[in-house]
Every structure is written in C-alpha cells, then in structure tokens.
Image 1 (cartoon, rainbow, N blue to C red):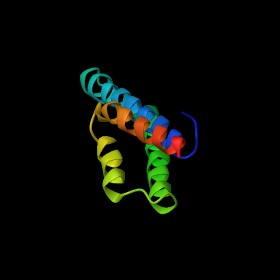
Image 2 (image 1 turned 90 degrees about the horizontal axis):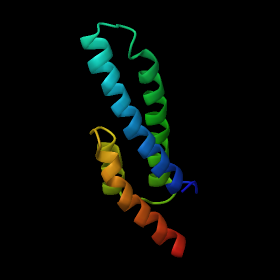
Image 3 (image 1 turned 90 degrees about the vertical axis):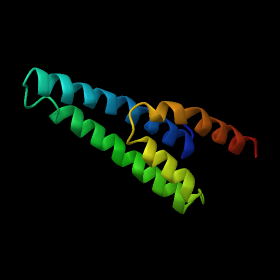
Length: 102
C-alpha cells in the first residue's frame, strides 16, 4: 500500500476520511453541544494538513502520471463527503493492482 504515488494517495484518502469524521465529532459534539470553543483547533489543523497532502498527491497524479481529470475529481469530491473515501478505496486498490501488473 505504501508505494508512491498511488499507495500514498490511498493512504491519505483514508486518513482524510477518518480525520474528517473526527473533525465532525469535535465540531458537533464538543463545540456545539458542550460549548468548548477550542475543540476544533487541533483536529482542524491535522485534517487540514492531511487534506493538503492529499490534494498535492492528486495534482502529482494529474501532472506526472497522466491521471484522467474525472478520476482526480472523484478523489477530491469524495474527500468532501463523510464516509465517501471508504467507498472509493476498493476502486483505488484495483487501480493500483492493475498498475503493478504492468
């Protein structure tokens, strides 16, 4: 899974999905319900860093590996929808396995 660049893209897609869910928890429960105004500061920075790396990996795949724009859009849109990266993972894994066979 840790093969550059598609393996790292898969990893950071999953990390982004997980960090997004954690951020939603902190923003809804900790900040809104419990009233802790600083609840999303640290999770937000972590999620932002992971999202930035994911975005850079998608740009790399577009520029260097000639990835289709449609595929890049799928990855970026799935990063904006809760649980979507987990449903995208099997197709990214299939794509990585096909590239390894070549």
